[in-house]
Image (tube, rainbow, N blue to C red; front, side):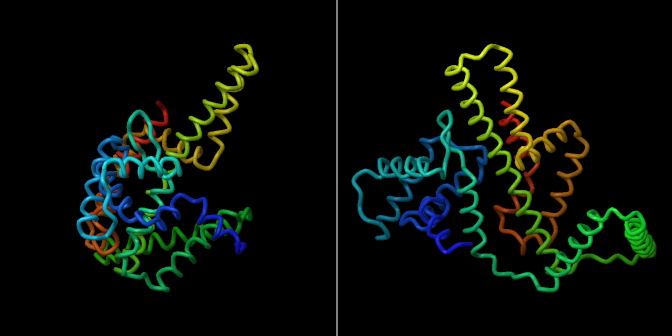
Length: 297
């Protein structure tokens, strides 16, 4: 990273601007509480009223300067972050952007005092390296040897389980794995949100193109299909398309939902995640379904 990049991020990245702002902690606290029960967005007026209440409380405690109209200040503050790209306003509702999600995850991680061991991290890296190397290897003999080794290990593990010898992950590895699952899963909703933004931008560009170029119907359809294909070929588009296809596989989604609830119910979950993060993970599938439906609409 060049030395000028952090300075540029400080000036232009909404999440960095929020964390560095004087009233940033207040805005984060309010939005975190509001989006906790409404991940699909909140009413703009509700956000204003909540922030105004917090500003008044902070003023009474001497944390911020007195203001004559807290509600006006709150409205101005939220409008400011919409303009900065931290929030989106659609049909009277305020929606969190990727930048806000990043800021919230950073703040939530500040009280995570349990550090995973180096040995645990090394084991994860070694496993992923082994799998990647095998999947990149086109040599049939080496691929066969890799699969045979996996089968032998599974057979040994199965024999041990049948004899009542069951090994579970040590606590430190379990905590790290739960956090890794949480981090990866929460990024999926952000991918869907980027797909929605991309579709809206593509739709706007297509409409402007139709008006300015006066294309015939055939050209319009071709442009629409081309823009759709380009969106699906982006990284977030591929993730969304894959999940959207899974929506027709109700059994698989139900299976994943039950697996997530089992993970959240594990004792290590309390040490790996706070209550809000546990709730996010428990309701992940429902949230992804809602996000995907919004993209389709």
